[in-house]
Amino acid sequence: MPAITYPARGTGKYGVLPGNSAVIGRSGRLFTFRLAVEGGIDGVDRTAFAQFVRATYGAPPGWASGGQYRFRQVGPGEEADFTLMLVTPATRDLVCGDGYDRYTSCRIGDRVVLNVARWAHGIPNYGASLTAYRQYMINHETGHRLGRGHELCPGPGRPAPVMQQQTLGLHGCTPYSWPYRDGVRYKGRLGQYDDPIPR
Image (cartoon, rainbow, N blue to C red; front, side):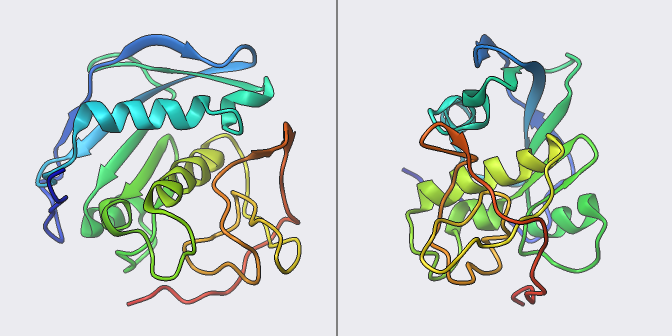
């Protein structure tokens, strides 16, 4: 596989990926979503990226598994409930509008913003595979679009809730990428830690 390469700041223009008519999930509110990749990012297989996002939503512990939500990917020019965007670090700051960061991802309005630096490299000492971290990124930021706030680690050695800011610290929890566990919505107490953003 080619390495993913990107500048600090991409073009600010986006390629929207073709849609897929399959509905992910059995019941619940249908969310339509677009996938967009910022210009300047190279080495991302667009087809595989789209398949990965859809598979993450539709996985047995994913957001579509609990009967509350369904998802369908739409293409260029179609109306969408949200756009999942893969962006460069400086564009992340521009879109998210929360000051200098360049490290984390975010959700702002109907934009679910994934930082390509995290997509390509994960985070140091996460304790799980890059694939698992990517699943976490998608599920965490999409969770915000579904109305979920940040959550805290429920106890040392326990899996981290997907809405915990695992990118900035696990606080004794172990990495966990998913909103459901053993068929039940898995969560922690509402709240967030005051973790610094790595520079």
